[in-house]
Length: 347
Image 1 (cartoon, rainbow, N blue to C red):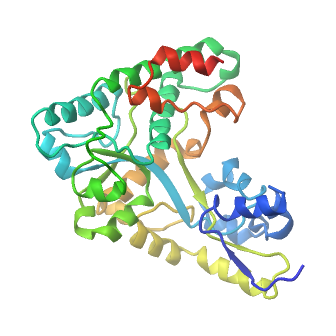
Image 2 (image 1 turned 180 degrees about the vertical axis):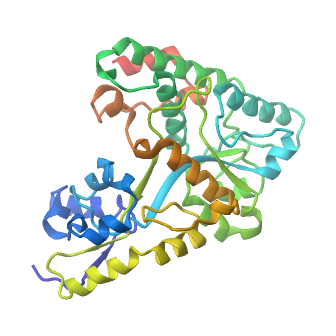
């Protein structure tokens, strides 16, 4: 095999790594063709300990550490402070309960009864994954610890049914107002027509590019739970941005460049420009001085969840079966009752 480049850009693991895996017919191709940086002492010294205890970080690259974990994503509900002021509500940044969430939805519903320009609680654009993450958070907060959960099917059943009923109750307040026809969600939330978006921290940069001044009104908050109980897992991850081929023409030079990309200076620069979390060690964060609400949120989430901050499928967690998909958007939208959805899930 001939190598014409040294470094492979892994802009998006789904788009790049998985596409190559499909062409090769080999999901483990990374272990065969890419440098595993786990072999270098400097790599361990430059990264936070957390990244070496979350298997999903390396599983996405064939079981290796394909490069510096500069880029990170923590998921949050984002809201516009100006929209919340218009509705007369104060939104909790942490510890939001289902009752709080329901109250915010009702506030939007009540506002829309007389408002000329309507607001939607959540958008009708790319909503399935957003609703699924909120649902997962409710289920896992009800279960608490996942210890021995595979041997407690009744607990799992009740947690799922309770969360579905919560979505059914939410649907009474029309959480997805189709009068607000959303095709670019970040534009609509910047303009105050959406209260909540569930998005990763990296989404803020898209909003900032669209309108830097309006983006200053966006605030990330922790997803809702039952009765202020912490879920056992929370969605977030770190990923490699670049990888090096094992047989690259200038392999040693490429590895040395990755070493530079793993330094504190690069990490601090990354944080200051993107507000995204990083898997690199950082000596000083601006959030240490309370200067940025997004970094403050990321620091809180990372400290609270630690090794439990990772991407997951609920079916895999609860049933050890990643092929089981639990995506209750239809209940959230009021198109199906909780009982109907659960009966279909059982099938």
